Length: 130
Image (cartoon, rainbow, N blue to C red):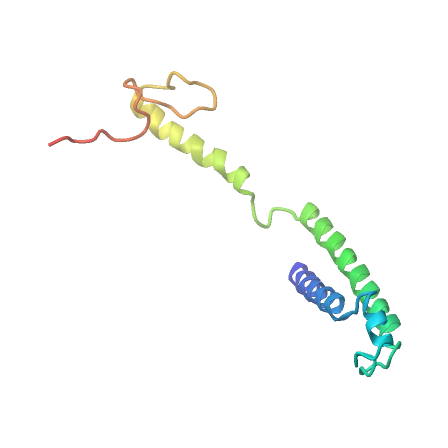
């Protein structure tokens, strides 16, 4: 369902962009009055304004509805895919336990900081100089 709404949302976004780019600006009417040749379009001299305006309004309204729908779906999504912030402390605590046991307990930082060895070098192995 989420994927379907997302696809419709993207298509509506592209439709709104296309419809806005197709429409003429307010200054284009003055050019048509002096015979610039733009008055002989597919919709006639004045027929495209109301149709394109209605289509843009409809697509924009549906775009906002799908935006709100996607926001509600994202807020109420259960445990489908955990957040990075949810998994990071579990991995850090596992690293603390393995590094903390080898270093003799918690380091000088304590609390949520990673355990450090007695030499203050952290979890990096020593560099062999030759």
